[in-house]
Image (cartoon, rainbow, N blue to C red):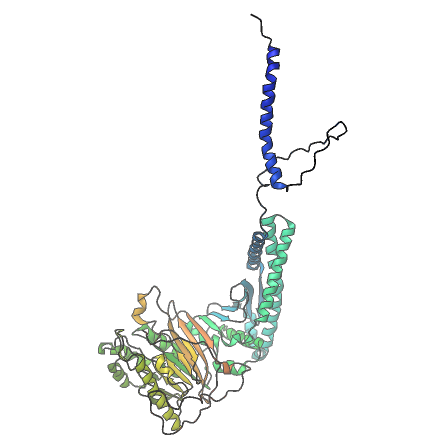
Length: 587
């Protein structure tokens, strides 16, 4: 048998191995074709080059390997922009938090001013431990916080030793505030730019991106400053909101009369506010006694106590702190109106001020008779009028008695009829030359029927406060629950707040000058919110008051026409204010 040559076998197998390598090479070139199809558009096919010995040989370019990023689309620009904005806002906030503050001596006090990010803007003056004042001074994404740290003993003693310096304290305070505001603006700009740039550099690791973040932060702060300047409200100091110790509220908020008459410019009013704070921080650390304006009559309006015994202590505290001249209760003092509840009314005699009362739908006839026998209590019903503390009041009791929340038989019609009877009595009083200054009813539907016959009407029933200017010029003032809804308030997840109002009347014209909304919560007497409000005609720069109401209908529905045509009574004509939406279905 012939012996096989291994070299010959290898020669015979070469075509097979050559074909195998060719097939493997074709399989590897498939992704290259896919890469060219994705990354490069299809080019028009060129005619084949002529074959022959003269045809130039083309050198193949090396193929680039296929990667995953070549097949994915590039990201859109708006996610990058949103990310940059988020970095800018976070960096600016951190910069303001750590470096956007300045310590400024304002008169005899050491204060700290700071700019803080905010959704609503405004100014907050913290007077620890008494509380804080909030002013709606501007609308911008930044707020101004002023913390009164402490009273400097040396400068305070200098004021005590030289009282003549108090006359120039306002100018000194204004100069200190201007200097502090300018210093705060420079520090805030530097803090915002540095914070945004540093955070941008930490996130992007690129100097150009970091500088872009700093420039955008400076632009946002400048836009916020322009917005604050455009929306600056110098009259916001006339309507401050106080939160803190209830006993400090009268001294911090001040007198309504002095605020109306002494307002000149915002800087002077702010200086007066700081001066009041200075008085609170006496050298002996004792609070000064509140000295009310002698030309102002102060009326405390309460309603819907609903058998809450804590209410009497709150009312007595308000009477003492604000030197109240008269208390007006617009009904629902009781909860079921039974004779067993009558001893609950005994503290009324010791509140320290005359008590004017009208019956609510939770007060029975027995409740009314019990109060009529008490001294210093004036029960008003069927349009009866009485003069207390220089003001003339008239009122009518609620015609319905529904302590069990049953559906009333008379409903809204009976309430409107009671209001018409009250309006008729008011027209009779005006025709007799004894016009009524304040009308009182429990239900808002009855109170609305007095429109055009009295400047102000007070009511309650709905357990939330509100103010409305009616069609013919009468101002309707609705009070919340001074008893926090009574024991029934515990039925909800959170107890209702305790609300009352202080009404300031001019002693000569007997017209409303301002009112304070008082809202108690938490520990009751420990904390409070006091919001000052002024009628539009009493704001600085307002036009002279006109006569109103003068266009009331001659007769109200369901009431007889008066024998003598009513004489128009000059009262201010206020601009429309926030409206309430009372309904007959109430507690």
